[in-house]
Length: 136
Figure 1 (cartoon, rainbow, N blue to C red):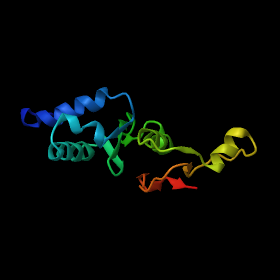
Figure 2: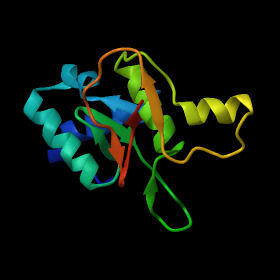
Figure 3: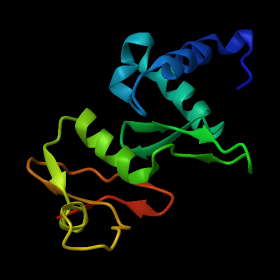
Figure 4: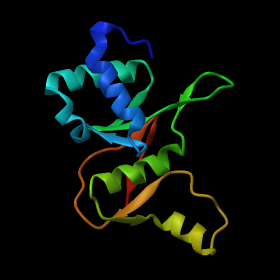
């Protein structure tokens, strides 16, 4: 990321995100750093530069560059990112039936489409590159 003196707030947000321990960054994590408008501009700029990707309303995930093809990607995949986002949003959930069957042994088929069973209300969509989190 190229940071100029004019982009000092963007640099502040970038440094905060780089030091943030989680893969998922919520917009609520950044509101203490500046005004809502400043945060929006910085997030939009970081998404355009492929430092972050927006996976839901107010939910962003850090991207990592693949050194072989220089493409950004989610480090642990969309399924793990979506589950971490649910945890960060304090949503009660359990793994979907296909994932439970795979983990417990009755099925050897690896679940491809991420799904979760909700224990509390959640009315948002989480998605990345055509994949969306399904709710059972």
